[in-house]
Image (cartoon, rainbow, N blue to C red; front, side):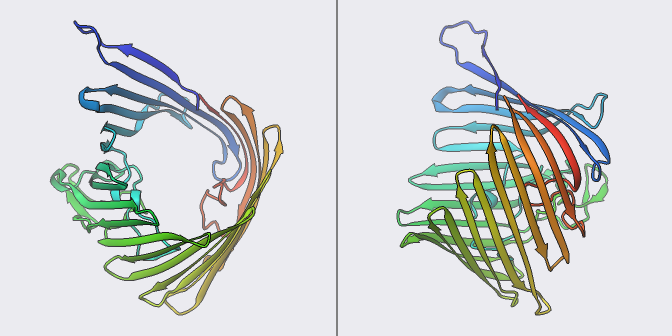
Length: 370
């Protein structure tokens, strides 16, 4: 992304003052969709990144996004994604819209049920990171949900811990999150009403969860073993991947304590202008019935900036088929033209169809990055 870099010098009474850097970036989109958007849609936003070197090797930083217009030709100023940070070579402290510690470090082995660590989506959190001797560790707390509703009396909520390490022949990852202190419908002294601490984030889990995983390489294959417990169930997963020329083959098997075992097979081909992914997954549900899903996704780089994509998926769980075909044309200098058609006969995936997450219906969109 191109950006404008403004370098300013503080007005001080002595020479050698530190130099602050402020960079700006922007995105703008105009499109038409005949289903989800029901016509034209548009959006424009500005990103701001500021940094200042302090004493003792510490750098202070701040970044945020301003949404100028979102399907609105009038004034629509709204800030989002605010992050304030203090970082050094081996440590960092972050406040604002940041990922949680467990989410940052956890690596699963296949589709495990019990490893549903909370995933940040606009919450306000504070996180500390430290790196030493091949070990990276983090700790975080949540201050408010993604609807800006503070926890009761502004307490810190849901301790989250994460660690990853490279031990030479092995790499390991461990994660823990405490149960959320706030039950759904807790009373907020700030807002005077019962609210849900998860806000609108469907990936926020209130469970206490622990997980540990380790990986190594054996005869060219990468093998990972993982265990997770969410206080209701536990999962044990094993996954492996192996490259064969331009094809990477992978598989996993997960044993669930509630007898909902599952497995998956995947093949990814990438060679020159062609890339193809084929994936199949199956698991036994709580009723003892096998549920399956599969998908195929492909892309062909025609050249001169034009890429054609297509995909198909079928899921027994939702009894629906998903199909998409699209062309993406790079106009140069951060500009992109998209023409796509996507169909989901059960609309189970909303407006995120296929791996590229296209909108249902016909879409023509031009986007710019500055």
